[in-house]
Image (tube, rainbow, N blue to C red):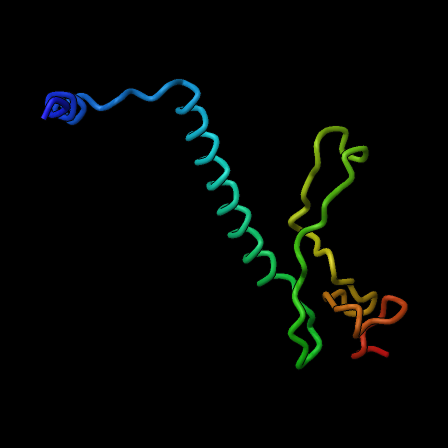
Length: 109
């Protein structure tokens, strides 16, 4: 009974968040957004880069990550080149390592 008036006040005037709590929520939201954006880009990348040999279902493991020393700042991600696939010298199509030898794919051996 004694705390009823406190509950009424709390329901009418919710507690304000501290600046640290607001910053933490913003950081978490940004992290969720970045993760969702990376997942969308990865799905698009894997649809684009896959082995062209008939019957093979291997897709790129993800984009190529450049060394920070090459770029001069942070780490850079190259979405235009796959990590686990090589390009055939003859047909210039992407091929998994299982179907390529000396940079020539199985179809052109």
